[in-house]
Length: 308
Image 1 (cartoon, one colour):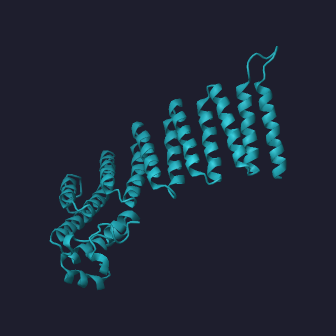
Image 2: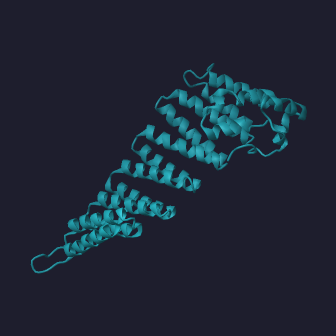
Image 3: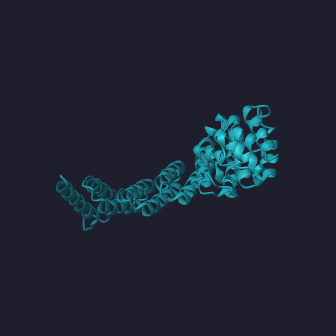
């Protein structure tokens, strides 16, 4: 079966080369037909699991689509070349091809396709390179934002924010979350603004910046429905406990369903939050049997206890 497919691939490549030849009766190469034959060859190689040869055939297809000024099809072929690299577990090379394809989609005037490809690239690289995934998600969000597709943009920003928390880049995460919150406000999704305020407070407290955390809550009072809401009361209680170094109060809020069932990266922030200075060793010891502070809570490392 594989040998048959490989033979078919070589036949298509021979036809492609024939399409490119010129002579007395044929003055111009037939780039369109050549691209089509290389596409067929690529599929045959792919079916035979000859991924490197499939990648080369897709790149040839892209070359002749480019010659023919059909950039969208060229970009699609380059993206497929990237997927052949993915099949060989060569993720950095795969991402390079997909990013190149995205630039061509943009040049062709199809930014939505570019943004969706960047999102796919982010998902591919996320298991092995969180930093690169953040970059790709933010780029994709930027493309959607430029097209006024804010719902798609904010979803991708959310992915980036969560990964920034996982990377412990909390300063960057706080900036990203503010952008998310502003976007949710613009599309009038106020309940999501409330959730983003909660995430911001957790991040600022992990950064040891009580003033910034308090400011986030105060600014959110202007959001319709925030004042007196469950989210608002929880954050006011958390800030009070943190300010008064009341480990029990902080633990009660951080282990409540409201925070425990947030996105996993934020839930971990909640469960690992400790008051500054410890609130006294006795309070910590008392909080431990209720399922909260482990003995290691005396460690001053803000990230101790489950950011990874």
